[in-house]
Image (tube, rainbow, N blue to C red; front, side):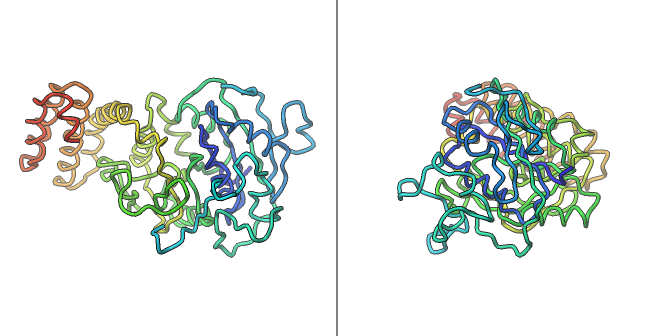
Length: 395
């Protein structure tokens, strides 16, 4: 049984998938399985995976044997479901180089997994790895299986992750989106923190935003800084915003066994809701090193604002049901009141954005009652009387 199960979710990001996969293979900690889950890609991702992953044994990692082949001889599991065709700053080079087809490098479809292997590379010495190996730990000889799963119909992010959870056998579960990257020491650092803190149920890391070429993006390209926390009780902090990037998280299997999987009703905030549930019962660990790299590009789900606003309203309403639990935890009164007032104000905003200004005013009124000095709530309450389009322009 592997120590870690990596759930690598794919959906139409073939241009970034090879580098993403290499970041997993280049880990200094090698006792893991990779479960690659494609949710209906139509950009050639499935064809690339079938051609490059099946039967691969390079770099100490075994690949999935295609249907009809002798899976026993490879010592691999195989899913019969999912048939074919279904459903840095400018003056500092980035540690994550991206192969640019426009510069003459091969397209993702022309790479083999031997090209991606962190050891035993079949390519020329003058082609650097997209993930610079900075660790000193030797690669373990133990082979790590790759299981390939194609959803017959589009299940969405959280339905796909739940399917991966059912397949996972590791003691810890890592989530990785196919357009993001890991530094080589990521799993090693996280597991060390778990060993030192048995009370921790989830460990995440610092990181950077990167662009389509893998270059570091300064500032807040998505409107917020890269999420960070302390190690400890972060529940109140999570009421303000999602402080944990999904691709940065490593979670004890026990958390999912006790709490259940991701809520599939969400479009893009199901991981936030999951982290809140974890933080209610476990401490959260944080590795203060840039080990996760979140890629920002036009196809990010976070750009689909209307669906995110619907998610936020559902999440903020759910948080309201957790107020009794929060009150029972003994937080300092001022901190708890501020967090609840913030939640109500956020609920007021998303209700108004979603076309319910009366509901928005009621939420802003609750925020003002909790925190009379919160002047923004007064201004936003007044703004709910504006036309919907005008209110949206203010946000």
